[in-house]
Image (cartoon, rainbow over all chains, first blue to last red):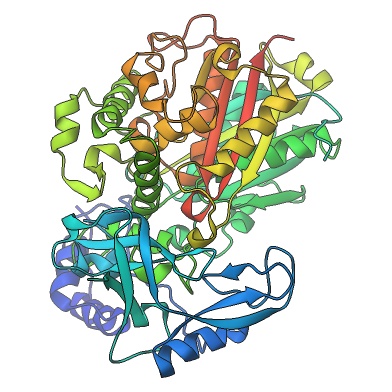
Length: 183
Length: 404
C-alpha cells in the first residue's frame, strides 16, 4: 500500500538507542508501517518519551527525610500555636499558619481504610497484588498513606494494628519504610 | 461569601465527539475542532461571535505537550481573544464551565466558549504492549510526589479507600451487589447513547465475576479512559434569548474542596468536596429538597461505589442509604430520579477534560427534550456533578434548568 522505509534498520537502531527499547519491540510495534504496509494517509506513529531529571530539594521537609534515611525514625510536625500534630509533616501549620516543632512518633498505628491493588501503573505492575492503606498513626492527628506488607493480604482489615518497618537501604524517600502487622 | 451572579447565564450551544478508546486519526486539537464546530452550528454562531474561551485539558503527559491549551487556541483560530486554562483532574470539565459561567455572569464576556478535550491513549507501555499501565503512570504524577506517589496507589485505589471507609461506618453499605447494579445500569444506558464507548447488556453476575482491580472494585466497576472532546457555548440573558431556541439556564454553580493529600482528610467515608459543592449549588438555585426538586442527574461514576456515595453526598438520600436508591430503581432510566442516563463515565467513557462537559451536554439535551429512547419525560431541572483533582479533592456541581 505505502512505501517501505528506505533505512528501516537505521531507524530501528537509532530509536532503540534513543528510547532504550529493544529492536524486537520496535519491530513488533512499528515493523508493518516501516515495511510500507500502511497508506500515506494512515495515522503515523512514532516512539517518544518525556522526562526530566531533578536534583530535588525537600527544603522545609528535609528533617523528615533525614530522620527516615539516617536514623530510621518516623517524625511528625506539631504546631506551636494550635497544637495539631501533622502527618504527613508540613514545614508550617497549614491550619493556622503557626510555626512547627519536629516530634518523633512511635511508628505504630492502625489501618483506617485500605485497598488491595491488583492492577497498577507501569511502575508498579510487577508488584501486584499489594496493599495500600491509610494508617492512623499513634501520636498524630492525621493519617499517612503507605503500603502494608503481610503474607496474606486478604487478611487485612480496618482497625488492624500495624508498625513501621524500615528498609535496609534507605534513599530519603517515603518508600524507605512500610508497615507490617504489629504482632 | 456572596454567591449571587450579576447576570443570568444560559447554555446556547453544545457539541461533542464520540467517546472512544482511541482516535488515532485525530489529535487533541482535531477532536477539539470537531466539538467546537458542532457547538457553533448548534448555537448558530460564528467563531467571531465568541468573546472569550475556557479550555479544560487535564493531562500534559497524555497530550505529550506541556500547556497544550496554548496551541488549542491557535488551532481553533481564536487568537487574539482572551483565554483561561482550567486543570482540576476529573473535575476539569465541570470547573471549566464554572469559570465560563464566571466570565459571563460577571460581564467580562457576553459569549464564552468552553471546551474540554482529552487524548490519553498515545501513552504506551512497550513491555506489556498495552496503553493502560502507561496512562495510569501519566495520571500518577498528579498524586503528591513526596508522600503518596510511591505507594503505587491508582485512582481506583483511592476511591476504593473511600468506599471501604464507608462500608466500615455504614455496616457494609454499599454492598458489592449494589455496586454491580450501578455497573449494569450505566452500561445499559450507554446502549442508547450513540457516542458511548462501552455500551453493554450485562448482569450483576458478570460484574461480580470480572477480575479484581482494587478491592472492592472489579473490572466492570471501573470506567475506562476515553478520547474525546466536548464543548458548550455560554451566553448572557439577552443574547441567549435572541439566538437560542431553548436556552438552558445555569441557575446553580457550586464548588467544594477537600485536602489533596489523603493523610489530611477528616472523613474518608464521604466526599466532603461533593457535599460542599452540592450545597453551594443548591443554595444558589434555591433548592431545598434536592431529591424532590431535581428531575435528572449526571453524577461522577468513575467507579460504581463512587456513584453510590455521591447520591448521599449530593443529598439525594440520607447518609448510608445510597445503595437503596439503585435497589429501589429510583436512579434507573425509568425511575423517579434517573442518574447517568448518558451511561456516565462507566458507560459513555471518561475523556477527563471533556467528561464534565459531556455530563452537562447530556442534561442540556434532556432538558431540551432532544432524545428518543433515553429521553427522560418532563425533565425541567438537572444536576451535574464533576469531581476529581488527585484523590477526588475537588468537586463542581451545576444546576441546569429549562424555561424561566
